[in-house]
Image 1 (tube, rainbow, N blue to C red):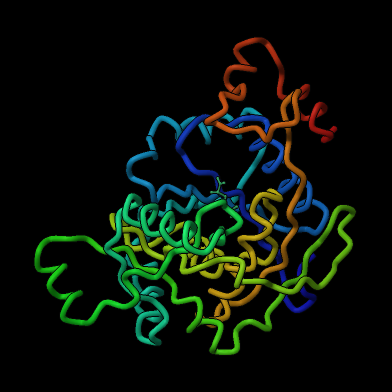
Image 2: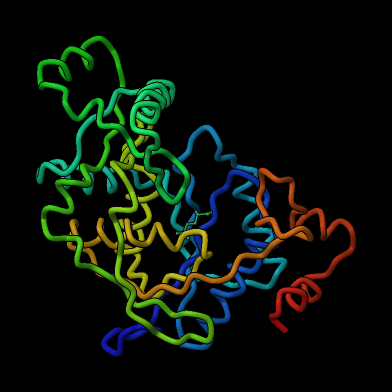
Length: 295
Ligand code: GLU
């Protein structure tokens, strides 16, 4: 999958420790393992634990145990995002220096109220691929004085990407090499304008998933990203951030998602059976591999 100039392809499996792994995670980890084997690559493990509210040490421990039980091997050391916040901060500063981010003091309620008003006036309001309404730009208009006053009064700000400014830099002509099913490589045009002014750094941590993932993939030398189809559209945004930060572009393979009996994507929130519960019920790792198509 990777370019002929790179020596050893690098892949990564990057779960978030906010619940126990389910069959969807197992599929993704096994897909990474099988692609790594096929292309002679190394598989890294990254713990995406930037969310202090949802990440828990017992879930992290369970990731190591469940992957080992499945027979997945990864190259040490494991990278834990919570230990690298200053690296994301540096990337954020680079975007800020280029005038590509702005502080946003809005609460979710503020955004929802502003969007309701705009939607009522114009009949509809755009949403991003995650289903979140485009940010209506309330804080984009704030003067420096207003911003200072809010910070002085103790308000915390998230940082949002100024999508218009980012696209105006000519970064909209970007794409990536996607390996579709069967590993047929094809060039895909990125469509970052599908996303509005997304949060690039949250109020409580100096990054977001989108920023951390591109910084990490670059710092870890990841050449081949293998992850679920649910992140296909996020890749447009990731390619934009890579381009703005002068980071290399990996190849991508967005694999199919594992669904439950009634066709819903497996999710922690939907109560999908976890690998540990299957294990407790006597299911073996070999059976799980076979069920997911990895003999
Ligand atoms: N941490 C993300 C998740 O658990 C995966 C991110 C990625 O592979 O880029 O869904």
